Image 1 (tube, rainbow over the protein chains, first blue to last red):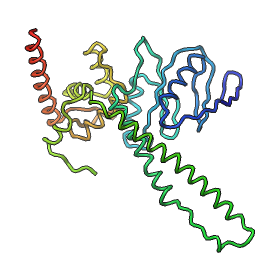
Image 2 (tube, one colour):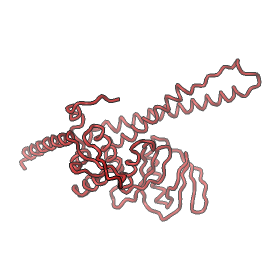
Image 3 (cartoon, chains in turn yellow, brown):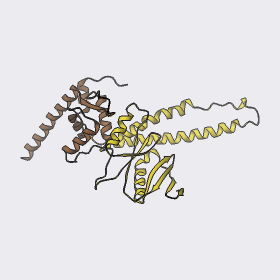
Image 4 (cartoon, chains in turn brown, yellow):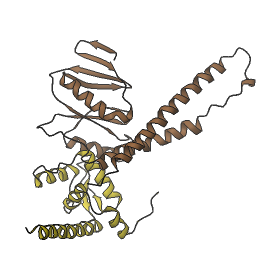
Length: 188
Length: 113
């Protein structure tokens, strides 16, 4: 794990995929126990600030910030005492300090939690379709002059697109499986 | 996307209500904000039922989509939405109360309480 320390602050590089959100929550909680509290996010990077070690419970939620009812969504979380620490590509990082032994939850049941992954899936599917169908590199080797760098660019772009497709495809399958598992029990 | 459903279909698809939905739907016989529902339910159940914001937001969205609750125009000074039961919401929760009463009555009878 790479880290860059600047006095009381540090940036950490760590990779969590969308389906590893519970692992990520746990890790953030462990960091807070060591006194490192989350301040800011960038893709695969976390900025922490040193403070008194305290047990903070972190919860991640997925919600489109462009949704019509986004203000109401925010109000409900805010009113119930959860602090929105940071948002990154529609992922919301909430935190709360537990008052007693009981661990606060944003979702009380598995069925309710599944709704979060349903929202994520609904956001993921259009992207998957766009990359598969719309952005399809079409290239004719014969039409390029000799010594052109175009074939190289085309080659790199295709590889990147395929990598992205693999990650997105794998992620979609993982998320569908998670939803099925969460919704397999009876509704409580 | 979804065809409008008949009242019967809606009742069949939402019952039995989850504990969260039951409390939310019942509480909204008086118009209230989301947070008001959360507080009321915590107080009534002595913190046994603590609705998380994700659960509450999801349930409010679903109940609204099903036409069991609706938003009331607020005075504008507060950005919070006010919710209340619709007549269909009320009949759903009344049916649930009857069902739950029958369930507990039978339970008592069978255990000789």
